Length: 337
Picture (cartoon, rainbow, N blue to C red):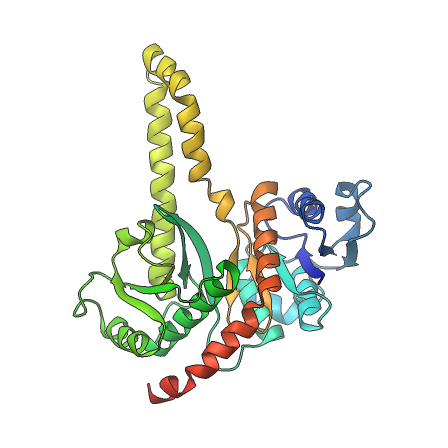
């Protein structure tokens, strides 16, 4: 089975300078994958070199979505943008997945308008992988839905568990809900009611998880509304940057600390590799009738390649069919709620 990935080559901070080399790397590493590079062909070709043959195709698009453009305006006016053309390829069945590093709001709006939602899913959710002490966890939603109902959180749990089951071949991945305490009485009414639905869902629900549990590896899937999820993610990124800055400052303090840095360099390099955010790049817009993966806008070639690999894994493992099946099984519970 050949997997085809449509790539919005013009999105992100670096555009074709990053997206095209990453696409070439993906094709070289996976013999069953082909890519369609979407964008301004005159901007893409210089980065292709002699790779513009075989499993790499070009699709011209006349417009580009800027990182600061209004999603609503983009949806109405830029119908031939590289982002929309790439998503249309998924809609038409010419591609199995789409990857973009472009404007997140525009990507969400266009994807939802073009692809529509899977039956039984009310809203798409942004799902990303975070490193933990035991490996990694999948967290959703990370910003697409600021206000959620208990049923939405139930749907997030179903989608997240389906994703992990498909990609990691786990029959019953654990699911938790991010809360201010582990006890059942903790949290607001939405979190409490959502927990009740998750307990009744048949998922491998383990209850509430506090903020520090995100990185302890307490659950394979952690659900929350987009407000809480985005704040937790940004706070984590800020803390990581703070610690890295402090560490550099201390090692540069004087001659002795600089010598200590030289001695500690092998350990520091291994530590850096373990927490390298580029290895976890690629957030899935779950709930759509198609696979769409959002790369970080500042991604380099390594990070964008990882986002492409994530899209390929999801297409190969049949994530959409698994989500649809599980949502259909839970429909009576949703109707009761």
